[in-house]
Image (cartoon, rainbow, N blue to C red; front, side, top):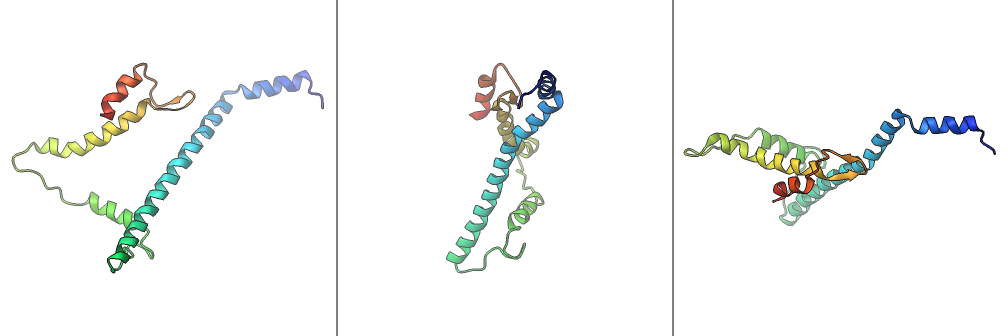
Length: 138
């Protein structure tokens, strides 16, 4: 099959369109999201198995009240953790004590800004990426 000049120009104009570049960008994110979803599901399964195995070792009933096989126990534990009462120190700095966990989580999330996930795919393209990332990794 011989392709004439008009067909070649049509193919070239289509491959250089901005919409196609955005579609390719979304397609390049798909493996990353698939990997994150797989890791999350694996962690939930491992936590569930750990609870079931330790319940059988201790000869007691395992986590089975949040759902039939206990699959929603992790969500129930997270909800319980969110609604627990905070115990604050009497003579300490209460605001700093309350903000401490947020500072720890934010510093970890900020370290992911300079990690290159692909060609031209980085959350923040800083020229001082290594010097920016090291303090958050410590």
